[in-house]
Image (cartoon, rainbow, N blue to C red; front, side, top):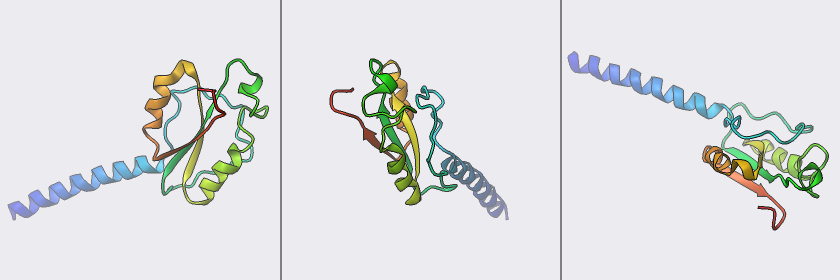
Length: 127
């Protein structure tokens, strides 16, 4: 009886821990520590509630160019970013749009560690 009670106690702890881990997996990756560069995400589909994988589409912001680069539209995203992200979302994955800025190099890579996959969209010579 004592062993059964102890096993049940450990089982409850495991269940609580597992629920906490799975709840974290349901939430998007916290990207609040890096600067949001884009003005909007117009056209981006809603993220899945329980994504198979958490993905990011990383773009480079070029400080010296209007809108962050010649490959960007006026909202700050590359022209193909929204369709690429929507393809990932349609496949059951989340896909958050993030920007690399030189000033936040270390923080950017710290945030990126929390994604399962990252698509890097950058013209040659921009990093």
